[in-house]
Image (tube, rainbow, N blue to C red; front, side, top):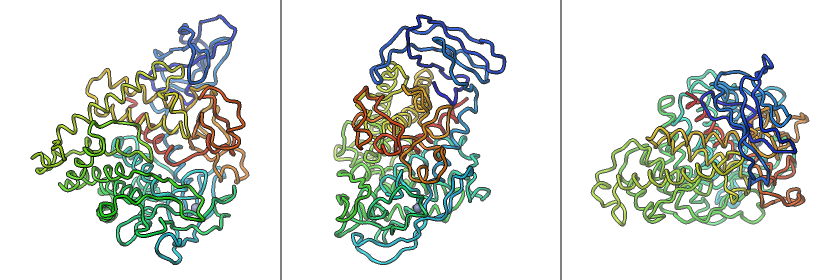
Length: 559
Ligand SMILES: [Zn+2]
């Protein structure tokens, strides 16, 4: 079950592993009085395909009074859990504060000993960047278990966080993060995101193009960030034009969103973001097919993507939403027609941004430009209203698939068997992002409720309702995982890991030696709490970001 707890009005279902006991009664006990306040009967025995477990469901959704409880079933008693309207508040703060923990170029102190002094100040332009010289290095979030920073992965991470700000301001405006900027004019949430935006802006060259990443040439050992003395290089493609299209278009999209979000707090910064976005867009249009591959001698993450059309699509849609300039809408409509005439909505990922483009086009509070309405936009002349209707319909279909899949899952999540690859927990969180966006567009109240419950179903899964009974977010829940592939957690001499980090999760296609040494099993079983198992237990900003999005939605929609 979800070890953090449940919303009073929400579904509350635990998955009970069946043993030899034939007792089908279960109860919910109040921790304060020790008395059973609810008695129920387990559902029919079922075989869960993802885990291979024989289960029965304990549904106690009707328990709605806030309090602390335990579940008793099959002769066993669960750890205590909470029911309450603010039950995900701390989880949201902890997951967002994890980004502060990932900050590069400054000292970090999360409290409790989780701290490091200033790191990676030694920056330089790599020979592959087309320029040379030293750079002062400042800003950005360490990407994952390593200390690299990658514009492509920053793109979707920062974009999803800013979308959460736009969709759920009621959950985020007052969020206090205890960061160095706390108490200033700008809300803490935006201040934290700005730390990464400022670094992304530094990776933009004078011509508007954006270098792909800034990392050392090879990964460092498992040491604290300030002990890593390798030079942090701005790395390019190795030949003209040196910058990559995906990174440049990602930056254009994210800076366009930032221009909307920061306007009310810092006009100067908002216009800097918009200028950067426009310049990046122009460069990407002039250089639409520059892909990235690690240059010789560089062995850090590649985030190589053979297709930058979806990044371009996203950039055009965000720029349209921000500025209302007809050229961006024309570009969006033409590209959308060329990319996928039927509009297929998938779960977004760092290499798959088309859904973000479609959704932001739908969320743009604009009527459509004069040129687009005249039918001169796309090659087949698709008009804005027609495009919006397609997006709305396909989003509803994609969400319905997830809702139906959840009905078949013994652990109440929306992952398909094929989704158990690298970062499956991030996929689950992004499926919730899709469901919450669909929830925003849906007008039928009953369907809306289903979409919300399916989104929350993945939160329950990540926070304990899974075959390990583990919370996959460090320091959340009664049994959180302990050994993330995360250098500061391994090197700081403190037993418990840094707080608020989401594990990559089960991976049925093991990609490291520890993972490969596991006995083959059902897909959900293919996970181990071992810091060496990077293909199963690494952390990453692009997995924490949709988790924050989901938690922001859960808090905002809590009633
Ligand atoms: Zn650093």
